Length: 142
Image (cartoon, rainbow, N blue to C red; front, side):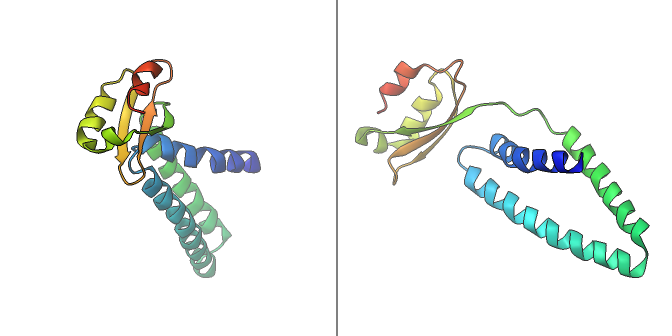
């Protein structure tokens, strides 16, 4: 059960971080997640070692159980994420001249939930609801 749960969480957690984060900060969120994951491994090992050195194995397991219960409480309080697809849209040069207006116009397209424009790359990063998305409206921006 432990390995099934562990492998499940290893796959699901990065996906949830990407779903909860905004389209314009997804890379930063993933970097913070990875850093926190490795720092947690380090701090958990140090705390476990100190507890074992000064107390006993039961203290290590008790600490792990308390930490798991706290995290479970935090996780249960999170809102259910919306399942949107990420989409990269290559913009034509005229759309890049005024990225603020283009961003507003893209936000008004049915099915587009979030917009971040990278003028230096010539693209717009979108989060879209494929069930609602009007593909024909997006063609005007390419």
